[in-house]
Image (cartoon, rainbow, N blue to C red; front, side, top):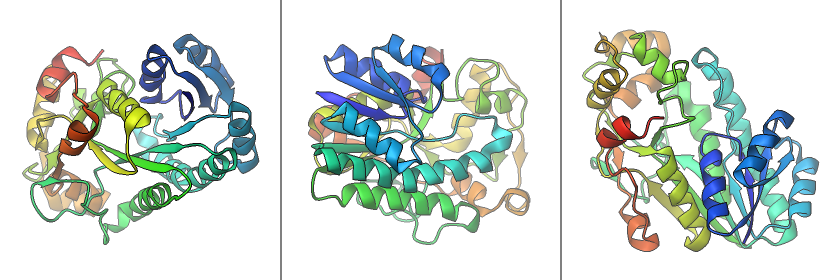
Length: 312
């Protein structure tokens, strides 16, 4: 198949492209930076520089590529952690305006499927410990993350609501591994905070996190591209765990001192309710559907092994 990967130079895009090429697909990959075209070409993609917020540029790029499938992996989460709010705002635009531009372009050329990135973090923190694909995004999110949840809701509704092609959304677990910020590189974003003991355990750290190695997230995406059905798939490993266990293990793997513990009320006052809820109330997801329907199996079924073997 001929596949248009929007965001091909991003953390997951850099893993999706070579997996698609290895399986015999033709890949056109977008980047915002001309400096990254060589790297994309080295992965086997035909690179194209395009601003995803420019509808005419997106329409032109997709028309020239003539793809059968569009893969939406656009984010702007590649800067230092101190710019997180700015990166989140830029990503929200990519998940709203960028999504609309890709869908319009895809409809114009008659693609058969659109596969888009979402994540599980904003799911409603209620119900059982393990949430399947029927779980809704939080209808009443904390104020400090409301714009982020609204952007994901727009993306999910827009993609799964198309009638002219198969609209597929992947809600990924937390990424780790090369290019994600949770890796062995000394200057990696979240890893650097953990090494410096600047990423604390909030309250009891009892929220459940579902993790997935970036290469496993990519292989799940390839499975969805090749044989996915319209709708939502959850993508995570087999070992959801309390935040405190995951952060403590990360500190051990990085050779850092154990993280500090900070009362929830302190973080609520300084950073907002959203940061507290994801550390104390988040639920895990089950990936039984994608395993059953698409035969997906992660290389790293547990982050405990992946943190040791798959960080570089």
